[in-house]
Image (cartoon, rainbow, N blue to C red; front, top):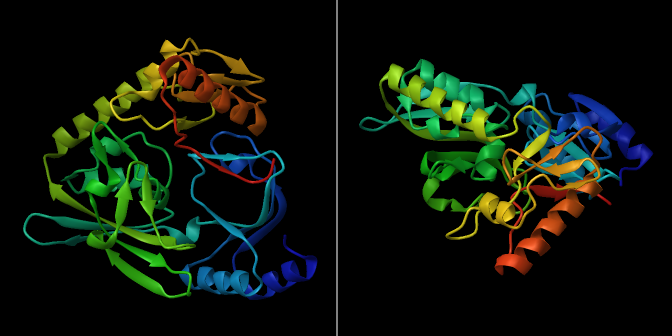
Length: 307
């Protein structure tokens, strides 16, 4: 909890914009959830470092928010401070690497689609698989986002992080521990920049592949309604969507949260869904698939906040 006197102190030491008791619905793709006590928008890296020093000194909890595309915020909201990496964390640079590689360095707040667009402009291949994956570059790496047999870990060359001791550290790929839909970072570390290794390619071929992947997504996924993307991780040897569909749950609804009729591994907000609706539906799916298939579905989306 953030006390009133701490909010006043925060305004004095922080240069970025600060919002108090503001709904998070407009900051996450599911369009559900309660208010954040504080939402802070750091102007730049130094502003973020100053903020983190303050939060740790005052023992105030925090949540780092990218584009909010893989998140459910519970209906009572989030205590502490939500840190939104926005305009102060934008920028992409390209440098020649060894042999045929080019290193594309992106700040964490950049949207993934913009990084893909820049790679296309410079005729660099390797990111096409991520076409249509929503979210920020930092969020995509932390979640080890992937599709069509490839993941962010396949192209990440290094990261710059803000560690819990307040120091900025450069971490090479060899020291990063990726797993399925996860990057294991030191406690409370924040990704500042991401460097990916790409190779020269044919611009027309890259553009064609991007267009084909986007068309496939539009055909199979409910992109016109609020969701958080894939809800469950694919168990080894199975597709979560197939398991949900075979359990007869496609189209099933709790409140205004519904298993998408287009893609059974998506839950969509039909308009006025609550976080409680979504979480009840997730639990129901897990129970039904376990009963029918003996397989435990593990959520891919992150759940934060209070009931």
